[in-house]
Length: 177
Length: 271
Image (cartoon, rainbow over all chains, first blue to last red; front, side, top):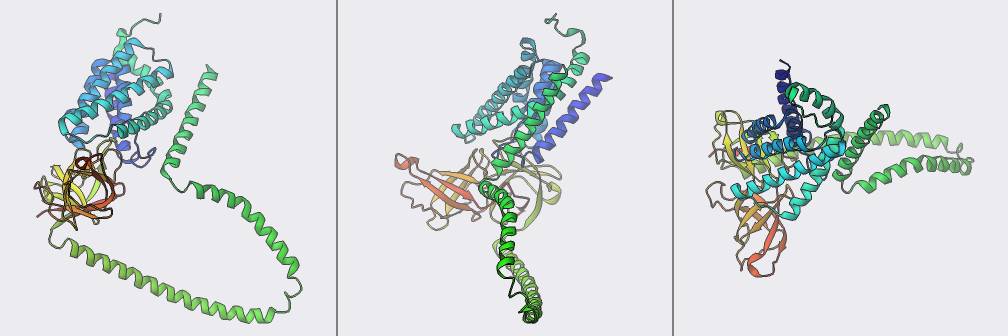
């Protein structure tokens, strides 16, 4: 039952983040660049709920975004699923108690997600990409994501352990003991 | 533990403040100087006013009572004049608004007389920094089909990529996956305008003929090649012409007529 509530609340938080991203953040920008909070959400799911949930939610969210606003179904879902897998890998190898490691995870996930998106779109849709401009936008986006992660970190930590206890249960690795 | 939590909260608050400052500073480009001016003025002006008042009080004290009758009469006269002028101004403003409105209507109907259009409102924008698609609130129920041209009052917006019963997805011309076949209005030189990632109001025109004579400020319109866009719709103006190292790799930067950041309503051409 509790698991069901967690899944529903994850989906609701995705909808809220999506609406924020498409309305509020289109105006609340740093030098015209928006953050990418959906990457942070999928990373959070991968970290605290496991690789499989990360992949499933990543693909679900990605397909929704592709149908609603994207040009081609599949690109966003593949990239978000990659972020979910990365979340699971980070969970196995790093501690989640430190703010710095979470920040580094967000930085690497944002960069990997955007570069993968860019390459896939270039291959499939033949988009017009100027590398210098791309790097500039990516840098500002990473900075924006860092600031948002610092603000959301207390919330992520509190809810994260609840989610982890409920979903992973006995499977939590006992490496710290 | 208590100390940790406190410092965490302070960190969050400081980050929020930094974020807001960054957003405000980066979005108000040239008004920073006047903002500082404003602060300085609010501090200095009251003091200056006080000093001037004191000075006037001291120097003009003797002839203040002499002219009081004359001043009263003058005051009455000026008041009357003022009310008349105000009335005139109000009438003038009404006429001016009416004039503007009529001019705009005339212009619009002349410009788009040959097309039947359906108006739509933008309900969603792209969430990514690298693509610029839009969703509008009209769909196949209103007669919208794929590949229809979408325009705004100022010029070309894009074309319809996909439709549902009551929404339609538009790929704008500034999207990095978009390429529009255009020509210059005066010299009829062909070129291909592609969207850029850097800016939501510039296009990069390439494939320009080597003997083409392109000047800054030239007006650009669609050529009708490719079958999606209707011929002769205004796209924008040439902002800069970049000559490459040789003749074939020169390109031009085009500023779009439509401001895509402030776009709210669009017209879909249905015929």
